[in-house]
Image (cartoon, rainbow, N blue to C red; front, side):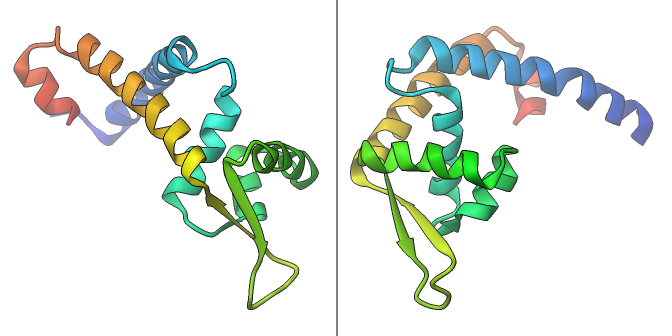
Length: 131
């Protein structure tokens, strides 16, 4: 039985490799209109409806001004909505538009299909361990 230290080492070894594979799949299946940072923004907003700009910037790891500019470009493309919070007008709430959801869903579906194909070569026991 593995110790927690061995498990932690394995996670630190494996997760970066998995993330590289996911990023590579995203790059190969995305449209020219959707960058990896934009994908991450859309995905975060999808999972966190009415997320604040501050929370999004913290999650992505960018400064608030940089994140604001990125969100401005997504608002201009009509992929993201931006509105003042009814409780605190200083707080900006973000949401996905229908177009943004379609863009995100397409990128996720193509990437998931590609990863599923790669994982299909694993023995059933290993696939069970991953899930």
